[in-house]
Amino acid sequence: MSRRLLHPLAVAALLLAAPAAAEVRILAFGDSITLGYGDSASGGGYPQRLQSWLRGDGFPVTVLNRGIGGETTAQGLARIGSVLDEGGDLLLLMEGTNDVFRNLSTETILYNLNALATHAEARGMRVVQATIVPHRPDGEGDNDNEQTLALRGAVLGLALRESRPVVDAFGPFWSLPGFWQTHYLADPDDPVGHPNAAGYDLLAEAFHRVVEPLVAHQPSGRIVPRSPAPRPGELAWFDIDLPGPHAAVRWRFGDGGRADGLAENGYAGAHLYLEPGTYEVAVEVTTLAGRVSPTGSW
Image (cartoon, rainbow, N blue to C red; front, side, top):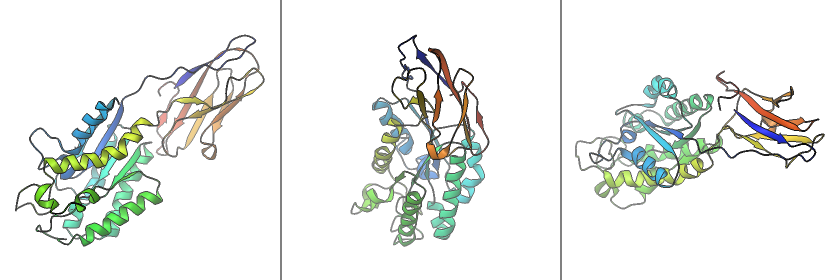
């Protein structure tokens, strides 16, 4: 990644061209409710709606639906690597319905959800966690939603501790009287309860409220000048717009000068230019997983 720093002769000025809006890739990860089971034929669940609404907001976004029916969080851990290999900026993580159906403990589900999230964060992705939708009261298992409510609180707490955005998918349904009759698939053989088209609209609205601000301010990896127009002999500061922690950030300032960006300083770089001229400022980023983004690739 690089930008041009211009010091024109005696009067120094910092010019940083505004980058064109890059496409934001979002991976929607989960089970059959992410997949969109029970939606209308062309509905596509909440991911397709979210993509359509975000594009309607003017954002160049692709939302990839990576839901698999019947999956537990443990099974999700077995495939998360291959999904992350596709690359992306945001991971939307909503899973646990099938764990609750199998009466797995809240502690186990939460451990797996956090492991899924940390896998994505190690790749430099930002994770949006989500609670799961209520079980239908006339379904099989957790008919009073006691465990689903406990998981809801645990997921909200985990997101707070780890500073992750969170979508409360449970709340909008639970606040509606008779939600399983108006917003769920009319299928008496559905053991857990899947939304119908109206329910997926509700779910998409919950995701849109959280994801739209993130997309609007999506960390882009671009270099951002911190200090105003420096003159030769003045210290020039540069920030880098990055999501999450990284193993190393190394700056190159175009005149032979180099520096390491420190996490406690937001990976910023500072350099003293002695002569006016045109310099190319570049940076190399190494993720916690050891993946290196070489200069010029951002």
